[in-house]
Image (cartoon, one colour):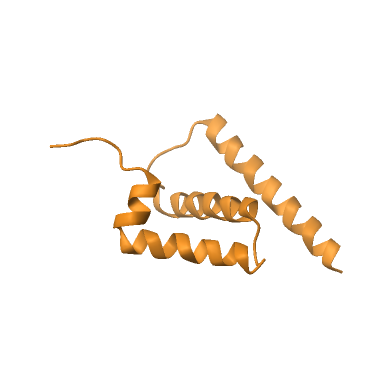
Length: 87
């Protein structure tokens, strides 16, 4: 049995669902709907939101909780700044 990690490139080549996800994200960039940084932030936020909703039985160390709050504050400030620039 081979226990090596599959690279993102291999997943892209052999997993149709993963390939579709990557192509969708690429289209967002090509259509100038989102920047690569915004897509990375959105993926991290989605993961954090999921974990916050589904991992309630575990307590988080204070440092981790603080890191989530820092990320949330950063994303919120950036979104407010972008909204103000559009006005």
